[in-house]
Length: 632
Image 1: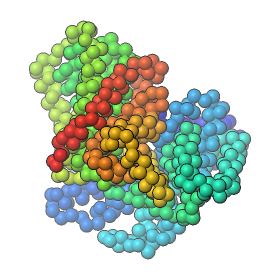
Image 2: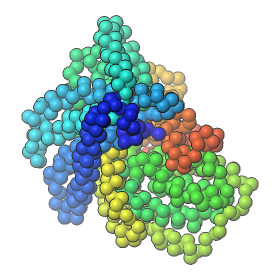
Image 3: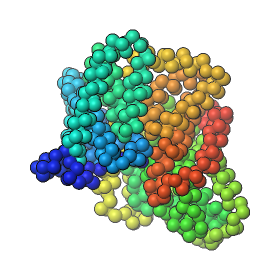
Image 4: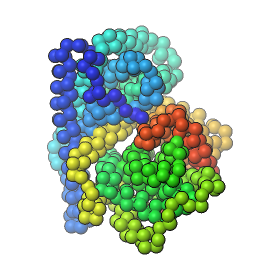
């Protein structure tokens, strides 16, 4: 799983200094940052939801749009993204790879964690002054509706970086040994000196030096558990500082550009909506209905698992959240019916990969934001690829259960099915309304998410009545944290993609990819393999933000439909994300089910093999992705 070691789990004896004063200082700083950032971020989530719902109500009901509403939402959105990233930093929830460092002995892991913290501080330190210079530059720009300096918005980046810097310092004060800290600083200083000395030699290499910064550098940082956003950002800063004379304010500007799209405001709203669906009892109602319908057949609850993932997937913004909402409701009964827990995890894991394209997937929203592809077209195209994947998984389930008992559960009566349908109907309506509204162009993804939050609150409180109000604040904080972790990766990846474009790499990549054997089909196959590998190390969002602007124009030039290419890329990344031994989604599924990964690893391959076949169908049959598009 991609989690850092929480600072609250560290013993004072392990600190940078054994002096109680130093430890208390770090703890006090951490506590102050917690109350400042978590409370502010939670409040911003509430304000954004309220503001967007008021915008929608005013526009569609009163027919009087709030002219300054979108501008204020955009201003607050950047503050939410940056404060959320600070919360994610303090809680250890930034996306990062821990598959390798998790196997290290405790002492070596402590050193690697300290080295990672020093790398984060280095990245923030390099951008600290440029960020505040960028704020100064934006004072002369006035917003159109609110007529205030744009500096009020972009200062969120400088403030956020400052708070992240303080968070890392607090972490070092409370958890790092002096020797580890000293060695880490010496290593980075030596590396910086080496780059400075080798500058002339690397200039002679031409664009081959990109391998040093953006392949070796990025992968080295990811392998030792550095947050992905820092790996992208520091590689970009190091390249521009060493190989060009580009001012680093442009890096801050590209990060701002990456996070500025109002489309991305749908991310925190859908994350919040997904958490509410689970907390309000709506997910359980949907699962109970599916169980009453087909739970009695051979492998019935396995089919229910696939159907439940299909219904809920994508709304929460986190595959771990999707799986966590479903597993507790199904696994106890499945174990009672004799299912092996390793088999259950294998199915849960593969269903996560199968459902990556189902709208309102945040990956779809991100692709639309960075490539300009219609989000409604992506939502339309995302249904059938998941159906193909679900059929492939169902075939494996049928094969495994073909010789089992005819029924291991009691068949529900028509009355029981009708009652469970009636109870689940308000919950079942929500996913269909959300997806239909965006696909039909009735409202934007952001507007629909705001409406969905209001609907979930009303229906959950009136119909299901099981919401514990004490859960609201943790849900708001978690929403801000996950959203910030996603959005700052988009900002860092946007800056990295811009640097690659400026180097001429995108043009060279286009030339190479246009000559691959097999034409468009060969390009699709190579892209699928590449995205499977990328998915093993990166989440879908950072991978698509980084490579989408580079590869989508090439695909379009080769005559490949944008939506078709998007579905192949997303499905392939899902396979990589949930494929052991590197895919972190697999370890997330094991952690949710509390199962040893070694046992589940042996059971997952038939399901992933079926999904590879499904991916082949997606590549060979474009209709699966674009058959329901209006102009297909």
